[in-house]
Image 1: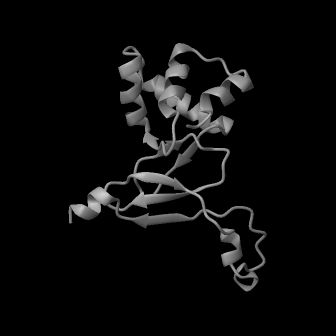
Image 2 (image 1 turned 30 degrees about the vertical axis):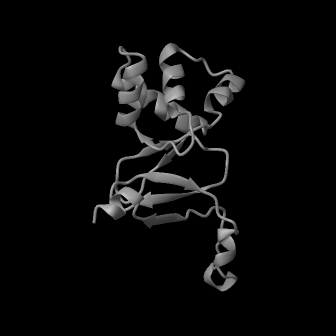
Amino acid sequence: MSDLLQRLRDRGWRLTAQRRVIAEVLDGEHVHFTADEVHARAVGRLPEISRASVYNTLGELVALGEVLEVTTDGRAKRYDPNAHQPHQHLVCAGCGAMRDVRLTADPLAALPEGERFGFAVTEVDVTFYGRCPECAAGG
């Protein structure tokens, strides 16, 4: 489970009923929901929550650095509460399912000094693509 709710409490972020429900929806491992998916799940817990509240809260969480906004291959933005642990993503090219993965080696080490063109590299973003078991079984 992620520790998003606890991190927000520790920051003293005002947890209204709407914000708490959104944080609860985002809590878990391998959570990468779209805003619409967050809204659908939040409505199940708090029927009166508006789509605008979800979008505004997600924007605030991203601005706070407590949630990552992830976009791959032009698909809808997804929201990842695993913002404080280094990880990469494994994405299904069929359905778009996403999982967090942790590399066993430093990805920056794969970029030889001669290929850096004088850049002071500060960040590496590696995304792995494949087919999840369900999509692979379907053809």
